[in-house]
Length: 317
Image (cartoon, rainbow, N blue to C red; front, side, top):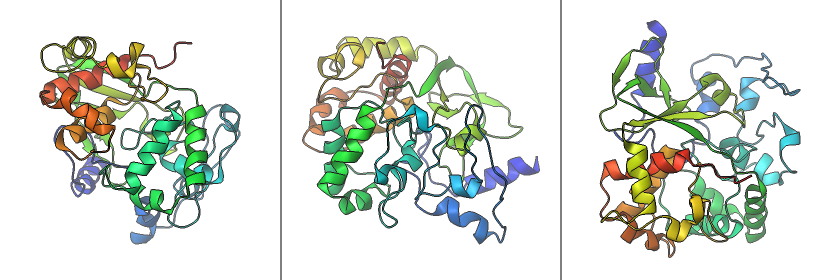
């Protein structure tokens, strides 16, 4: 019970949306690195291991935002320096948040296999602030040259797209809280169950693997019963209040040459983007095309759409 109380107390200081599992954007740049020293506790020097990997890292090395852990170097092409190490200043290693696989976490994004032109456009929108998030992405985008952006985008675009999460419909969910430094929901130690109450709750399948930045670690997204069927109706038909997603995002929502895939993305991440389109926090030229699609959607509709796209296989192979 003591560990649960400490977790809940620390989690209480993180501001979050009641219906999204975390606040927008990537992790703060120094929060996890500074935490042990702030408590007067020396970081552990124990080398951690992942099954199937020959690499070994301490938690301090894993948490270094300027040297992303590369557990499985044979699973990806060579990384540009900014992806693996950043620039030592404003630009952190992209793989520290988005992982070497591009899979990312719900509070960042699954970038694997997204169109190169789309990724370049998002960096431009971070630069000009037409994409609003509480994240370090603005400073990083501003500090990157056009060549940097092209190289980083090419890397993530080249990666195999992988589904981020397993979607599960349910009436009840484990009690969760926002992890104080990872900025994502995790199941409370010794916690019980509670009604889902119309929310979308996404948590790691294995918190330990996520904390080690395992590039293959997945999540489970809990959604209200009936969400997937409703989401499919909304995504494939007008249903009287939206535009069929496949009209722009392609067959099976796997994207096109210039439009991103929705298939297999984190449901929590998708929900956060739908809400940002509706609120106007995303208002770039291409983002404006989403306004007619979201303006009549309820929160339950957006959760349903997010759940449905999370069930889709992003890779036809």
